[in-house]
Image 1 (cartoon, rainbow, N blue to C red):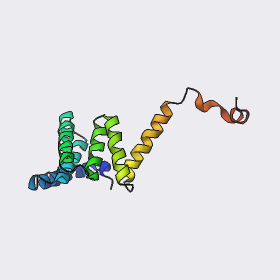
Image 2 (tube, rainbow, N blue to C red; image 1 turned 180 degrees about the vertical axis):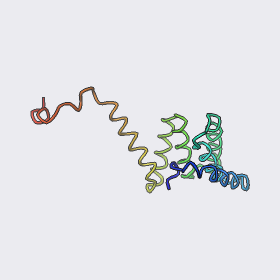
Image 3 (cartoon, helix red, strand yellow; image 1 turned 135 degrees about the vertical axis):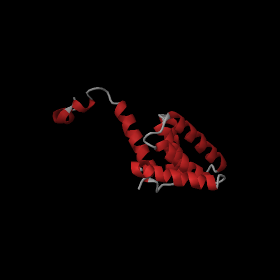
Image 4 (cartoon, rainbow, N blue to C red; image 1 turned 120 degrees about the horizontal axis):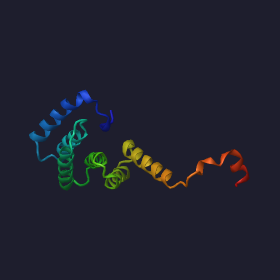
Length: 136
């Protein structure tokens, strides 16, 4: 299961287990990252939950800067917070260091597709068959 598709009924249990792991070993950045990720992705997460999670994730990256999982969690939470530019940079970091991370690659592809669509002039797709044949 992809981390960004957590089933609502299982979020509370996952959050409780991640919190338990984080509290049991607060020096382990990956536990803090997972807990912050789950906390921010809850359906009822408030702005302060997301802000706290971003702080936890940045602190975790400060301890273990090359951990791709934590960077992925940060990218997802940044996207949820509406900080698309920093999220895309994090997704790019993850995709470059872990080519098998299809979720990060997908996010980058979607971003490029959306960016490409926003640059098309109005009526760009209206040339039709004859317009393409005769290059009007």
